[in-house]
Length: 212
Length: 335
Image (tube, rainbow over all chains, first blue to last red; front, side, top):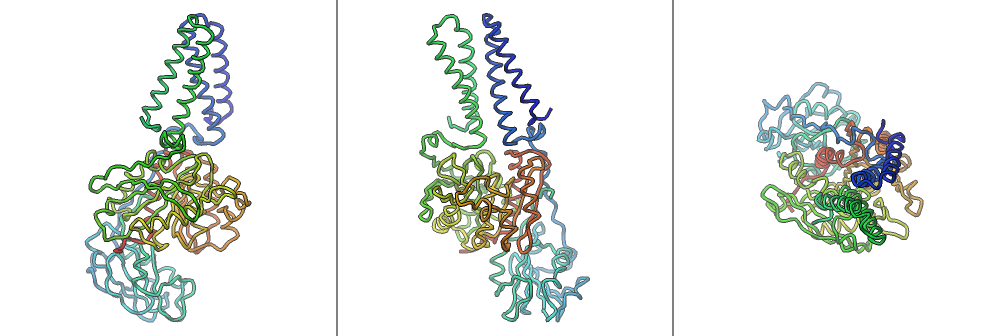
């Protein structure tokens, strides 16, 4: 019998009526009088609750009444493939597989933040720099310097995030810095590196996640 | 004895039981007037017990004073090291003309790092409800303390405003025609007050919204309507439409999340949409929203298998939702 079903409501109603009838019938007996009144009250409140729950579906099933199973998980932060071979605060050339299709003028450069190795459980947000100027290492962001050409646009750079997250401990949060030249189509770009850093979250540990 | 304490409910139940037994015992020893008085007492105490328990679950009237219209403003004592605290203020809104109490969660870092300005989340309650649903029933302060301590969240200031000046008027965070101007209060007055009184970051990149049930609709709707003020919103069991009459028919258009996503350009913000799979109304609305999202708007979905439209679901969803929000909001920065 479903918690929100009519049968349960009718059953509770029938029990209420039966209790009223029985209590009135044997009203002169004290134990019946006490028990009858108490049961009547409980059934009336129950009936009202069932009707309200049927209308609003707060608890759509018996299962829901028992709470909800714990399904949120915290995945461990996995190390990036290059974590072991880089030093904090340095700028390293980065040539992941597939980078040839990004349409760049020179080899991409990754600037490792100074706190990268002291916070091994954290993942870092990313600043994608399209100005060609290598930024100084900044706390709490990993920067990637890409030298764009006429062929560089949002579509050609679509695989950058996946390549980055394989090699480094990064999040999927990005800010893009572009120069004053023509905008790369499809990229929401900021003018300065500092502005980009200000917009990004800090490095965080892996979040609680629910199934999607 | 507070109105929302389990002890208050237990005492009322005991009174109801005692009145019932007394009625049964004394029935043949008292006159009609006495019987009538006892019956009235029994009926009232049963209703009171049920009403108190419902109020305890929803926190519609968080204090006895709220029943008579004088809202409570009680601040929790200073937290232990590493613990944030909830402070209560009265926020008067010059734009909306509304004046209501608001809870403010200040993370531990708020006092230990006086040099920093913090990101902000406005956390909206359901209907019927009050900010105390977040603080008393969902344990938001302990939840945030834990997430921040674990590094899953940045230290964040969380604002807990009322959505309505009258407890039983459902605003759905809209400007009701001829009624409360909740949207103006929440998106203009509350942020302005926070910027004036708290060390919070002013940039939209540092502002997010969260809410459960009606508050979930509010979070999505307000973020979509004000992408120049908010950058991310998390909906816990929210609906695609307000389910009320706003007065200008905008519940079918501008104040309808599904309509906005279908007919208006989508803003470059991020949504987190969570629901319980057996909560059919919220599930269908949330799935519809997730299907309608197009770039540059992004959506992350989150599902718990069952739990209905209940506090148990929102207790479990709070940490994932706030972790996600924090990962989409700008960091605390030196002022």
